[in-house]
Image 1 (cartoon, rainbow, N blue to C red):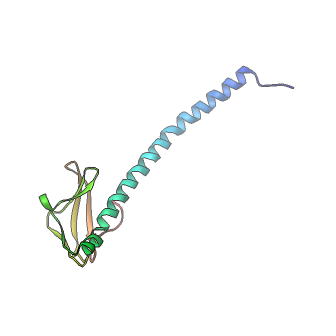
Image 2: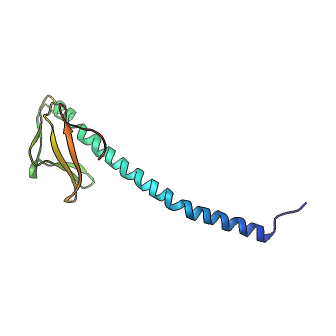
Image 3: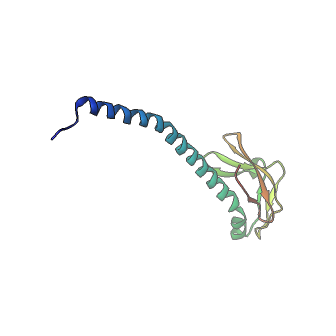
Length: 122
């Protein structure tokens, strides 16, 4: 019965290491993209839930500047140059909003009436 020589084992080990070294950056990049996409999905869900929140609280929600900015967590805030009003029945006339992270613009968002839903991906 014949086994593998030390040279053969070393060659296989080197090849496996090279393949791993080539594949690892791609896997890391894919994981980072997936994490970013997941973060955007969470933001989109939070923005799209605002009509239901206004309906449940039976009070209007105003998205604007300053005190009317909405905190979305993780340093993100939803603001608008022109106030966007979610009425107490959940209906909204739409408008353009900006999601900022730590003061920097992260996304420009178009909110589509009648419920000001953020459609599509940024």
